[in-house]
Length: 287
Image 1 (tube, rainbow, N blue to C red):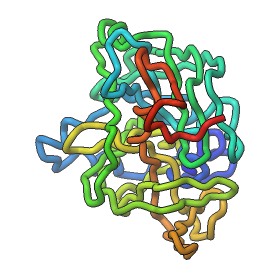
Image 2: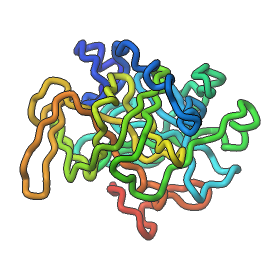
Image 3: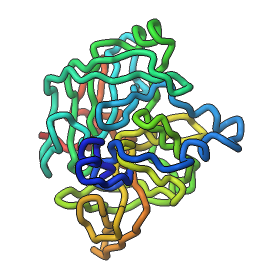
């Protein structure tokens, strides 16, 4: 995992994407600049507006296609960024009290305000690696106070070859690459994730980028959440995820980073942004 910041610093690991969650670590020289220069007009639409910084990770204010402006806003990050620690394999957390704060960023990456959680709506590291916080503010209130819109989560599966950007609110850095392909199973330590998105090598995310939204450049929608990468070339260990195909064959790609797709999440939230794991089409793991 791209370690959360404290974990990354404690182990002196600064890569941004392995199961050691991509939380904060030493910044890679020039990563931000490479994302900014030479961008076509369509690419410049992807900026920091709506992203957030956590104490040890990155995240974003999100909404779903059916969300209303009057709904309580949501923040998306990784399961391994949860303030109470990594959820165990098989563990699913719902409606857990939280007062966590988030630094809201504008398009330039400047912090314009502080948002606060009311609860953890959903968190798991089983099949996927996500935490979704419900905030004390609505989308309309955030827009009125800060002029910031939430990022919309796509409800369709991403496509290989698509140009993407990984936007880190913690580091205030944008990584640009393409969706290289999809992994049947991504295994890291005790955790296994399904249908993970693999980046091309240009997205060399580091610790602290865990929880960053992965944005489809063409649509501007969130298609995944950044979470891990193979740092040392080890096989299926923490910070060194391995790919497992349908036949059980294992592939190790040192230096390659990954994200967990998010298209399946909107079906699990109904009117008022209320979690409903029994809703038709909802395939997220249940408690």
